Image (cartoon, rainbow, N blue to C red):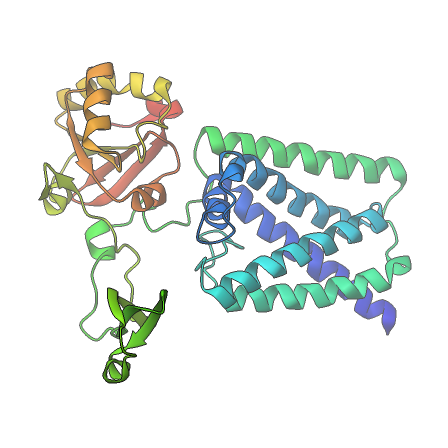
Length: 366
């Protein structure tokens, strides 16, 4: 009985770690955005780690996959199980912190393939922790499946393949696109809210300074405000989240005017996504002028979407001699559209036809 439970735990934990790791390895840049959230001031206030978020993300996801493989084949079981235990304790702490303090809404455990609430993620980690503890206390029952040479070769091969996959998707695009803007999606339809969709329940919260401390009060509490309380701010608190369409933050502004529908209504549209021009790859920006000329010659409208300020836009236009329109859009929305900075998206009446990394501009089908 003990052996059966241990072997089931071995298979369950190994497969789940491999699946979770591969999904995130398909899009390590997206996972790095989640880590940056954890490093931000409202959460752990460790901004000095932010520049290394992508490197940390790569190490973690490769470690997940390789440890899963090592567990399944029984390779160095003591080191493997100790490593899995340390990882799951760390993940459990992070998901509990996210859920309890309501800071990071989605831990990114399964990337964009499967969205879990913080409490669901925490529950998943608790279940994994139980199974890993079973393995921890029954390590002697984890036997190697193959001889030493084969075991070494399988572990090394998994490490090399994971490293290559990480390198490939960072320098091109994710092999599988799980995001709302994947090829074939019509942006306008993905923004629609059905008439019978559940509505959000929102409560107004008033913040008053009481004895030098900012204190929150609901609307019904205002009648009993302490004497001398000073109004500070008012915010809306979502009690129950209503229906949220897959795409809900796509808004394009040109010179302060909303031009979203103008873009989505065009037949031949080439959109360049550069969420932050200061962080954009200079090599990629240098290719845009020729791309613009080629696209216009074939009847395309060309525009660039960015979350950068007008001052940065003006500097970039002058430096790279760019003649097309620059639209302002929320940076988070642009990071969701595509990971490369810059990247290129072809739209046909708002439907995503093609997406390429700036390294692959020559693969565009205009």
